[in-house]
Length: 177
Image 1 (cartoon, rainbow, N blue to C red):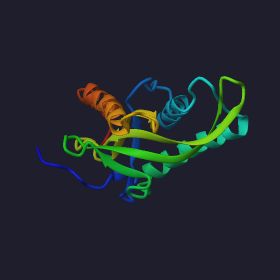
Image 2 (image 1 turned 45 degrees about the vertical axis):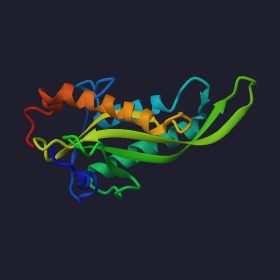
Image 3 (image 1 turned 90 degrees about the vertical axis):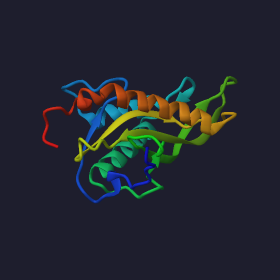
Image 4 (image 1 turned 135 degrees about the vertical axis):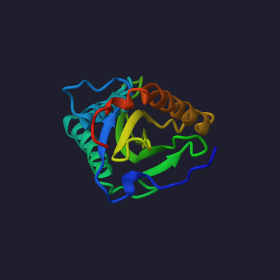
């Protein structure tokens, strides 16, 4: 199989349609970007994480803003979107958020302020040239013993969603592509 190092459609300066095909699924009546934002928000809200209304709203807007810019083909390669698992078709990409401000309540009741990195993996199937399909998101575990191995597990989850949706064309069957 050929190795793929091509740029993402999300940095192509061409409009795209975003679809969420991951867990939880996007309901037919639901907006796909809203569904992805909710998944992303859930991933950065582990037990002990606290959000004030302002900061939670700002993080949601940051997630939405990046996905909307991706759908306009406006992401900056490597800083905001980059290929992952390039040795295996289909290539997957990650949309990246590097410095999401968070507050964690520690067991002793004190709070710790910090920043986290967040990733959303998506595919850009050949058979759907005007789309990019979100499959999985996670908060990158920078404290893991092997950060790369931990991230590879997350990428494997995204690949699983890609494969699961391949027959149904990720919910875009019947649309003009």
